[in-house]
Length: 173
Image 1 (tube, one colour):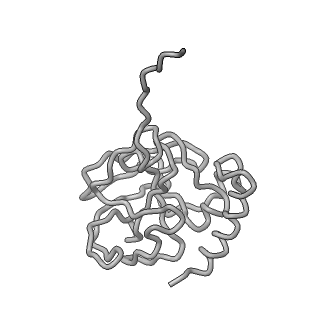
Image 2 (tube, rainbow, N blue to C red):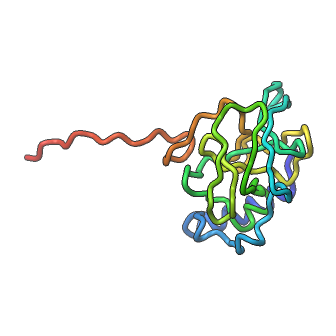
Protein backbone atom coordinates (compact mmCIF):
# COMPACT_ATOMS: atom_id res chain seq x y z
CA UNK A 1 0.00 0.00 0.00
CA UNK A 2 1.42 3.39 -1.00
CA UNK A 3 1.18 6.26 1.45
CA UNK A 4 0.04 9.56 -0.15
CA UNK A 5 2.24 11.68 2.13
CA UNK A 6 5.25 9.49 1.36
CA UNK A 7 4.63 9.75 -2.38
CA UNK A 8 4.34 13.55 -2.25
CA UNK A 9 7.40 13.84 -0.01
CA UNK A 10 9.26 11.43 -2.29
CA UNK A 11 8.55 13.65 -5.29
CA UNK A 12 9.82 16.66 -3.37
CA UNK A 13 12.92 14.78 -2.22
CA UNK A 14 13.60 13.60 -5.77
CA UNK A 15 13.52 17.21 -6.94
CA UNK A 16 15.90 18.26 -4.15
CA UNK A 17 18.18 15.32 -4.90
CA UNK A 18 18.24 16.18 -8.60
CA UNK A 19 19.19 19.74 -7.71
CA UNK A 20 22.28 18.67 -5.81
CA UNK A 21 21.50 16.16 -3.11
CA UNK A 22 19.98 16.16 0.30
CA UNK A 23 21.98 17.22 3.30
CA UNK A 24 21.05 18.74 6.62
CA UNK A 25 22.15 22.11 5.26
CA UNK A 26 20.35 21.91 1.90
CA UNK A 27 17.09 20.25 2.97
CA UNK A 28 14.19 22.62 3.43
CA UNK A 29 14.57 23.06 7.14
CA UNK A 30 13.02 24.81 10.04
CA UNK A 31 14.42 25.82 13.41
CA UNK A 32 15.04 22.93 15.79
CA UNK A 33 12.43 24.28 18.18
CA UNK A 34 9.69 23.72 15.58
CA UNK A 35 10.90 20.28 14.45
CA UNK A 36 8.28 17.69 15.37
CA UNK A 37 9.26 15.19 18.00
CA UNK A 38 8.03 11.68 18.54
CA UNK A 39 7.11 12.44 22.12
CA UNK A 40 6.24 15.55 24.09
CA UNK A 41 7.35 14.15 27.43
CA UNK A 42 10.71 14.91 29.00
CA UNK A 43 11.59 11.21 29.17
CA UNK A 44 11.47 9.18 25.96
CA UNK A 45 11.25 5.59 27.11
CA UNK A 46 12.57 3.17 24.50
CA UNK A 47 11.36 -0.36 24.97
CA UNK A 48 11.08 -3.59 23.02
CA UNK A 49 7.90 -5.07 21.60
CA UNK A 50 6.96 -7.77 19.09
CA UNK A 51 5.75 -6.52 15.71
CA UNK A 52 5.04 -7.81 12.22
CA UNK A 53 7.81 -6.55 9.94
CA UNK A 54 7.41 -7.53 6.28
CA UNK A 55 5.45 -10.68 7.20
CA UNK A 56 7.78 -11.81 10.01
CA UNK A 57 7.28 -11.30 13.74
CA UNK A 58 10.34 -9.52 15.14
CA UNK A 59 11.28 -7.83 18.39
CA UNK A 60 11.69 -4.14 17.61
CA UNK A 61 12.29 -0.90 19.48
CA UNK A 62 9.24 1.27 20.18
CA UNK A 63 8.72 4.57 21.97
CA UNK A 64 6.68 5.12 25.15
CA UNK A 65 3.48 5.20 23.06
CA UNK A 66 4.23 1.88 21.31
CA UNK A 67 5.17 3.51 17.98
CA UNK A 68 7.90 1.64 16.07
CA UNK A 69 11.29 3.33 15.99
CA UNK A 70 13.35 3.59 12.83
CA UNK A 71 16.88 4.56 11.83
CA UNK A 72 17.87 6.42 8.66
CA UNK A 73 20.66 4.65 6.81
CA UNK A 74 22.50 7.85 5.62
CA UNK A 75 22.78 9.29 9.18
CA UNK A 76 26.13 9.23 10.94
CA UNK A 77 26.84 8.78 14.64
CA UNK A 78 27.45 12.53 14.89
CA UNK A 79 24.80 13.97 12.56
CA UNK A 80 21.14 13.47 11.68
CA UNK A 81 20.36 14.23 8.04
CA UNK A 82 16.60 14.24 8.68
CA UNK A 83 15.31 17.83 8.68
CA UNK A 84 12.53 19.94 7.19
CA UNK A 85 9.79 18.11 5.29
CA UNK A 86 11.56 14.78 5.78
CA UNK A 87 11.39 15.31 9.56
CA UNK A 88 7.66 16.00 9.32
CA UNK A 89 7.15 12.47 7.91
CA UNK A 90 9.83 10.92 10.12
CA UNK A 91 9.66 12.81 13.45
CA UNK A 92 12.89 12.51 15.46
CA UNK A 93 12.63 10.97 18.92
CA UNK A 94 13.87 13.66 21.30
CA UNK A 95 14.53 13.72 25.03
CA UNK A 96 17.22 15.24 27.23
CA UNK A 97 17.25 12.09 29.43
CA UNK A 98 15.97 8.95 27.68
CA UNK A 99 15.53 5.60 29.38
CA UNK A 100 15.40 2.06 27.99
CA UNK A 101 13.52 -1.07 29.01
CA UNK A 102 14.36 -4.46 27.50
CA UNK A 103 17.02 -3.13 25.13
CA UNK A 104 20.65 -3.84 25.94
CA UNK A 105 22.20 -1.41 23.45
CA UNK A 106 23.64 1.99 24.25
CA UNK A 107 21.01 4.73 24.53
CA UNK A 108 22.42 8.27 24.28
CA UNK A 109 21.48 11.79 23.23
CA UNK A 110 22.85 13.52 20.12
CA UNK A 111 22.64 17.30 20.35
CA UNK A 112 22.04 18.31 16.74
CA UNK A 113 19.65 20.10 14.39
CA UNK A 114 16.74 18.17 15.95
CA UNK A 115 17.60 19.13 19.54
CA UNK A 116 18.24 16.32 22.04
CA UNK A 117 17.80 13.43 19.61
CA UNK A 118 17.76 9.94 21.12
CA UNK A 119 20.20 7.46 19.60
CA UNK A 120 20.45 3.70 19.98
CA UNK A 121 23.90 2.23 19.39
CA UNK A 122 24.77 5.53 17.69
CA UNK A 123 21.75 5.54 15.32
CA UNK A 124 19.44 8.58 15.65
CA UNK A 125 15.87 7.31 16.11
CA UNK A 126 12.63 8.34 14.39
CA UNK A 127 8.96 7.40 14.23
CA UNK A 128 6.88 7.37 11.02
CA UNK A 129 3.88 9.70 10.63
CA UNK A 130 1.68 6.94 9.14
CA UNK A 131 2.34 4.35 11.88
CA UNK A 132 0.12 3.53 14.82
CA UNK A 133 1.07 1.62 17.98
CA UNK A 134 2.02 -1.94 17.08
CA UNK A 135 1.95 -1.21 13.33
CA UNK A 136 5.08 -1.11 11.13
CA UNK A 137 4.38 0.56 7.76
CA UNK A 138 7.60 2.47 7.11
CA UNK A 139 10.07 -0.42 6.74
CA UNK A 140 12.41 0.31 3.81
CA UNK A 141 10.66 3.53 2.77
CA UNK A 142 12.99 6.43 1.92
CA UNK A 143 15.99 4.51 3.38
CA UNK A 144 14.40 4.16 6.86
CA UNK A 145 14.50 0.78 8.60
CA UNK A 146 13.00 -0.58 11.83
CA UNK A 147 15.36 -0.40 14.80
CA UNK A 148 15.85 -3.69 16.64
CA UNK A 149 17.63 -4.42 19.93
CA UNK A 150 20.47 -6.05 17.95
CA UNK A 151 21.07 -2.97 15.75
CA UNK A 152 24.77 -2.89 14.90
CA UNK A 153 26.57 0.02 16.59
CA UNK A 154 27.13 2.98 14.28
CA UNK A 155 30.48 4.67 14.22
CA UNK A 156 31.12 7.74 12.10
CA UNK A 157 30.30 5.94 8.83
CA UNK A 158 26.70 5.87 7.56
CA UNK A 159 24.81 2.71 8.53
CA UNK A 160 25.33 -0.12 6.09
CA UNK A 161 28.48 1.47 4.68
CA UNK A 162 31.69 -0.24 5.70
CA UNK A 163 34.37 2.13 6.98
CA UNK A 164 37.00 2.82 4.37
CA UNK A 165 40.38 1.25 4.91
CA UNK A 166 43.47 3.00 3.67
CA UNK A 167 45.27 1.23 0.88
CA UNK A 168 49.00 1.08 0.40
CA UNK A 169 50.29 3.61 -2.11
CA UNK A 170 51.17 2.15 -5.50
CA UNK A 171 54.64 2.79 -6.81
CA UNK A 172 54.68 5.36 -9.59
CA UNK A 173 56.64 4.97 -12.81
